Amino acid sequence: MSALVPLLVGIPLIGAAINLIFGRRKKTQIVVSVASLAAVLVLGAVLLVTVDTSGPIAVAIAAWDIPFGIVLYVDVLAALLVVVTSIVLLAVLLFSIGQGAADNDEDTPVSIFYPAYLILGAGIFNAFIAGDLFNLYVGFEILLVASYVLITLGGTESRIRTGVVYIVVSLVSSILFLAAIAMVYGALGTVNMVQISERMSLLPQDTQTILHLMLLLAFAIKAAVFPLSFWLPDSYPTAPAPVTAVFAGLLTKVGVYAIIRTETQLFVDNDFNFLLMMVALSTMIVGILGAVAQAELKRILSFTLVSHIGYMIFGLAINTPLAVGATIYYIVHHIIVQTTLFLAVGLIERRAGSTSILKVKGLMRAAPLLAVLYFIPAINLGGLPPFSGFIGKYALFDAAAQVGTPVMIVLIVGGIVTSILTLYALMRAWNLSFWREDDDSAETTERIAYLGNAPAATISTERRTTPKIMTLATVGMVAVTVSLTIFAGPLLDMCLRAGVDITDGVSLVQIQEQAGQR
Image (cartoon, rainbow, N blue to C red; front, side):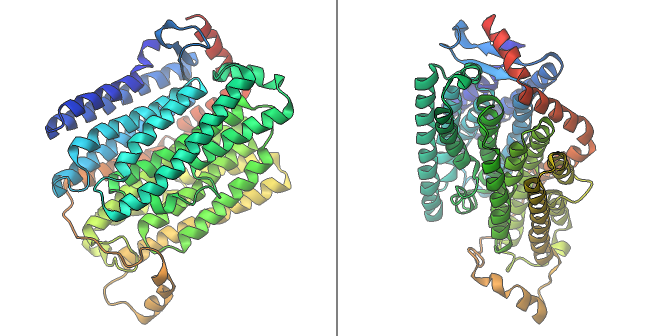
């Protein structure tokens, strides 16, 4: 099985190279892209079953001894995220194929989009299976370079402007990360995560704190943790719908994944849990208050994205096996549900010619299927039972309640308030966009008048036809969100097992033993 691990990164990169060679052949690029991601999905599923039953897998690339070579690690957490990422990338790819066919690739030039898309996937997969900090940095840079291309596709003024902000923020984060790697190597003589965890306790406490803060700061920017989330609400909504969906679902989670590794495996004895609790609470509350104040669907979802990163930081701050397992489940839930919502909003934009809830009206009668495609993931994200959003939040709150400190109670209350406001913001948008008819009452007009000055509140776009493949891709993702509820038992159990392994250091011990034998 170890021979399959490098293919998780190699297949998308080879696919990207083939797409560049056949830059003028759209059908060839489509076939190569779909086949590449489907192959990674199959490999990821095989590896997930393997590591869940037999333990983590470690591969030393090119037979170099540790710590001189590149080591790839696959445990349950990494394999699960690879599978989820593959599903999302495949669904969004199908959505983009339909959009490109209908729009003649005005927003997503084929010769650029498909290679960049596969390179983005390769970077994400590499980050999830990286066994050392420098390879994790390489994964970040691969996906960031691809994201620079994707976020500015079309070359419009708004995309270039917001793309510049995104690039600058990403470069600052990368510089901080690279500086932190240099400091870790200078202090410990290695960047291998296993060896870092073993040697960290030998350093003075002040040195550990500095290294810890540097890595946390770099990853917090990538994860859009408040107050370092200022760049996200303006950057994501301007990109093409498929790009926005992928960015919203995946890119911030790579930062959260890096924080999980940092907090549970690298700095076990250096406790920043209280700081993370305060950051989590601020991220939840500030993010959702921003969502309530928006009148444009993409911006509403972007702010809810920020607020729900707070739940993940909340789980990490509790720092118990149950809490870490619940966090992993919530990450899986949020990747899929957030992506689905952005795809649904992409369909709304095509059907109504706008994503402003002040301008979109009467879609319930005109597009009842679209109403369902938005409604199901919206109430899921809002945390209504019995959906996965409720299950994930309940697991987090249960873990916090078992700790039982006053701070935990405050965080539970903050999480409940955030969930209620999430439901309010998303259902208000659903009510105005789908149930409101053209003959607005004076009461309704007065009730939403305060949103008139919200950013992008009056922006309209051209109404366009919606190919069936775009609708089918969104339907498929909605089905996946429902499956998270249907199979919540076994999935949550797997996530809890992963949480126990990570917090107890089982993964690191097994990985070290395997890598040392290669």
